Image 1 (cartoon, helix red, strand yellow):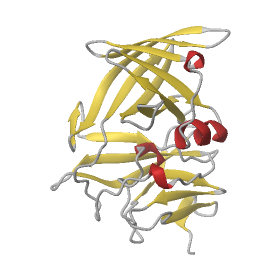
Image 2 (cartoon, helix red, strand yellow):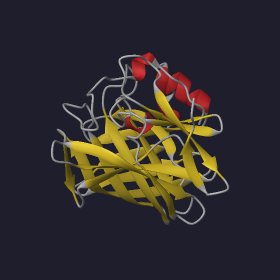
Image 3 (cartoon, rainbow, N blue to C red):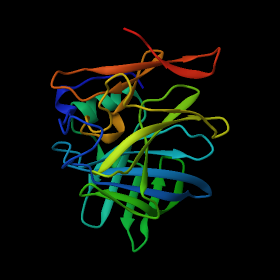
Length: 246
């Protein structure tokens, strides 16, 4: 996904790796779309006139996060997939109106999570998701004290999963797992706070804290100025992502 910076997509929250009063209400789900295992992460927030939920999900056998946007109502959620950069720019960044009837996910809340359908012109697939972890009021609750965030930024070979966890002073993120999409192995753990990057609580959409920037990935850092970031590029010689010196 190509980096598309937007000033209105920024929330200034803190000057350290810890979060204080952040507007992140996020639920992580695990389950199936028909027979296919999936992970889904949804952030509930008023992103504009037409969107109040955004997220990211991936099929376990592909591990390529797909951006989501849609409408969260009292007992149901309708989600569209951002299948290309144009969708991200028009609907998620510019906030343009979209045809909600074409959104593939129609989900209903139940006692354990979400259930419903994923549909297109050819198929209707059953969806069953169990809520595993929730971040709300600066606290992580559920089956784990860690919240995995599949960032939208990714490369053809790798996806990037941020690990938000409870620290002494609140939520902290000091690990981003670099995942090989072919086999699911973690090939590297990046400390995103390096190089004076106060990372993890800058972008309004939590999934946008890492974006793709050409042939490299870009970590969005806290700053009173816009577009402050640290870039990483994959080095084939040592099979690691290294900081790109500007």
